[in-house]
Amino acid sequence: MTVRQSAALYVASMEDPRAESAVPVLIEMLKDEQTGTLTQTSAAELLGQIGPPAEAALPILKKKAKSQDEGLRRTAEWALRRIRGE
Image 1 (cartoon, one colour):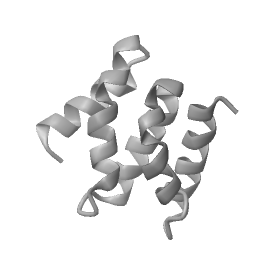
Image 2: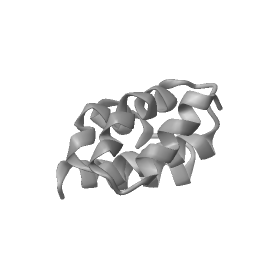
Image 3: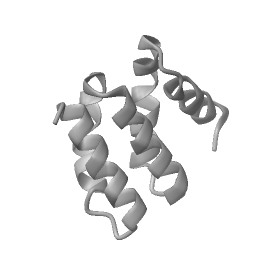
Image 4: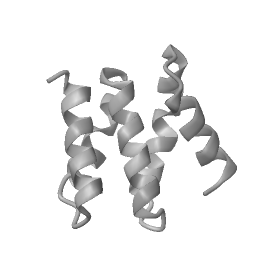
């Protein structure tokens, strides 16, 4: 994990309106197939916590909602619901 990715995870984990600034990096983490499943699951969870401001992540979260990994799949499904406000 890069310093930039670590910083994005940290910023997004703070319940702060500025957390949405981490959305582009979290999306990159989900798109990068070299990123481990645990890190991708964390990125999906944080996107869900950010909620509607993370709307740009919907396409990649839809893809991850079809993951073979149950944890990533369930987290992506949860994040989709949160971002959509369901």
